[in-house]
Length: 276
Image 1 (cartoon, one colour):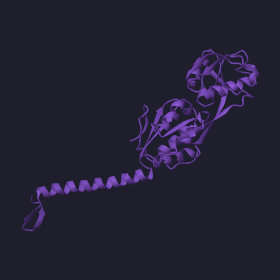
Image 2 (image 1 turned 60 degrees about the vertical axis):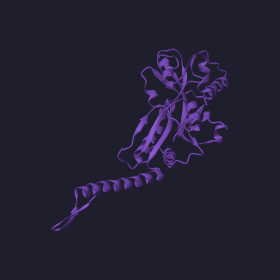
Image 3 (image 1 turned 90 degrees about the vertical axis):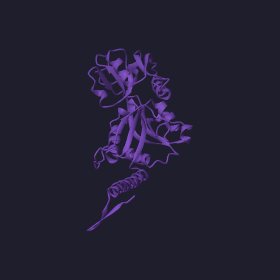
Image 4 (image 1 turned 30 degrees about the vertical axis):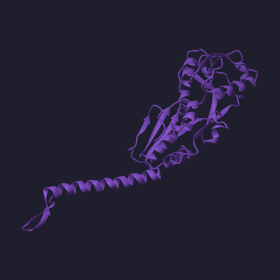
């Protein structure tokens, strides 16, 4: 195969030579891109971070703001937000089905912490949700004693036993035995039932929940219950992309950011299997 042709004015590439040169340049360019991609993976600027995400986490303004900050700073890292309950998140992160979980601190126990690490990423204040026509909706102050005899909507204990039990103990400490007429799996369901007057219920405060046309969120002056939102991940996970995500979630939500083009992807997907 002749790559060159001899001409009166010298040597030049043959047709086969021109094709060979074109292919060689493409191969060298691909090698260069592969080297840069490998460097990005090694530095944590490329890859995928899978995060368990629930309705509770979405209700905290600072958490979505921190997720946005990560997206802007790391546009080449794909952030997958996987919808699942708090209990399922803890099991999934332990089994390497996800890389991080954002749940209440009540889901932390000694057995889990043998393989997991955690850090606080937000606070959650518990308030009382009332139908706007309820007798307490416009009360100057609400105390636990005012809730005696009320019909309660309650978190589904099977999904969140520690959370439900913490609220129950707070009621019992003030001599209030909730008349639970319905358990609900999510705060959205609870608020929809509160909104039609079925009963009252405890939810964590968030700005978008306070804007309902049929529900009022009120502080109970002597209800001393609050929760921490915590980010959990495996101690054994050495992903640099995950480390950068953890760092982003530790920053204040209102910290100024250097904005980058959004060339990466944020995906809301079904739970994934173990990372290869």
